Image (cartoon, rainbow, N blue to C red; front, side):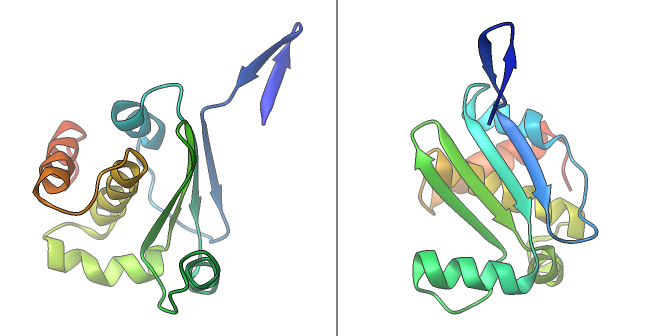
Length: 136
């Protein structure tokens, strides 16, 4: 996972992967750093419905296709999986553009990795980061 520069291992703190053709671009790494810090090692993956459902079934014993999944691997490392095909139709329910809703779900996943549960505190933080990064 790291890159070796003259005998010093440099850890890459953000990786973006995709198994689908198109996904919205945002300053994902800057958002990650704002929520979790620069040292937190995160992988963000955009996936299709089959992979999202399979991950949800295997790791959460849930059969539905999720819009976002977040998996803490340790206190300083985690993974987020986003499924735009499921998320896009939901955007109108949150008064966000389709792409804005993807960014919202990314922030939502980051806050779960930080240890937040659903509720007023998490919702307030989501709104704060949406404003900070001018997401609509």
